[in-house]
Amino acid sequence: SCTFSVMVTSGTAGSYLNNFSKFSNTNNIDTSQTSATLNVIVDTSNVDIAITKTVEPFEAVLGDQVTFTITASNIGTSEGTNIEVIEALPQGYEFISAVSSIGIFDESTLIWNIPSLMPNEDATLQITVQVVSSINLLNVASLIGLSEIDRDPSNNEDSAIIDISNCLQIP
Picture 1: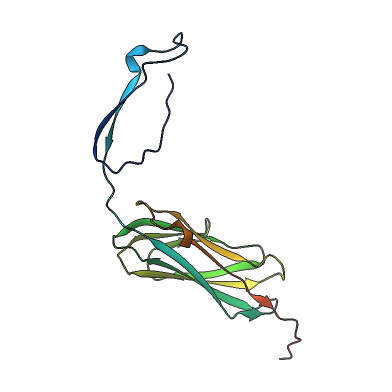
Picture 2 (picture 1 turned 180 degrees about the vertical axis):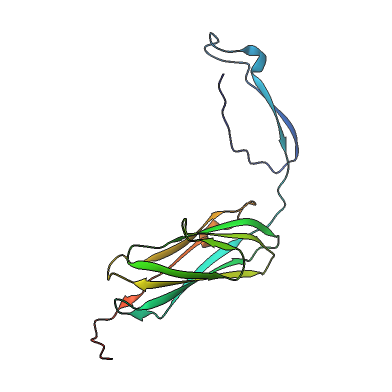
């Protein structure tokens, strides 16, 4: 027995028969299972989840705390559901806390789960970290899951980085 899967793109709804009747080697083929029917449903959703990221303050010294703000915005015209954003926190930071306006942030996986976003709705996640290194500071957030098709994948990721100040700070 063997199985395979294919991605089908079609703008026409209906039922299609895929018949594999011509094989070059039929020695190991169960000919009673050489066809399959595919039901195509046209996707009329228009979901576009845009990810943006900022950091405050922009400049820090080792030991300072900074806050990254990630915003997930549905700039499409249909509701987006089961949205997952991963926060790729690099080794230059140590996680302190997270607060989200919608959904749940899992500190162990660094994945932010947003149940749904209506058109023109935003959700924010603020992550507070401590700067523990002067290298490896580029912080990236990426859309990694969505039940619907995202119409514009070019805006599914954003990053922010801090500058390490070389100035001596006297308390």
